[in-house]
Length: 259
Image (cartoon, rainbow, N blue to C red; front, side, top):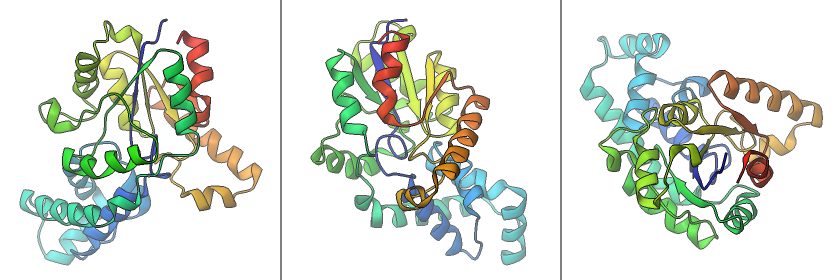
């Protein structure tokens, strides 16, 4: 293999340890309408376009029943739109607080650039959301060569492959065989596999791990090892070719597979 391009996700992979910004915004959006999702229900669809995320949450058995009990009827498409609008308002109110690169991101990206590898990116965020996140991340030293949002790929976000393919067009990458996709959710793994490229999950800081930086640092070494093993297994079950314990490990992986 000769990896010439990597495609990085944003929240939970490159910035926002634990992908906390959307989690908090989703929970508050549902609570504003009388139902309270669990963390597992909130995180399960992570990585998808955000309206689709709301729809999947609301179609789950428990939340659907909770909505029925609260409102006396099944949820509708209009309800999905209403919750999504509340989510957007919540997210924009706090998004600027969640653009800090994960520990190791800047160092890993610098080494990747020294290897002559281009850095693209995909996200479940819309372009207006990324217009908040990307400049703030750039101020802190992180700026990929390219960014594609779902609406810039015909509205087809993950798990569809089109955002990755659009990156390849913009970056002039010759073949999908030269691409490594890296993310922190099941949807990221599905996106990479659908695109036909090698795909890797990253554990520390990920939505799949589901912990804030403070929660992670408070764990014992034994607890950390158990969480890492469990998260790695989930990635492999989702189709990952590789799993990085930390983004720190990216240059090592690239040297092994042919960066």
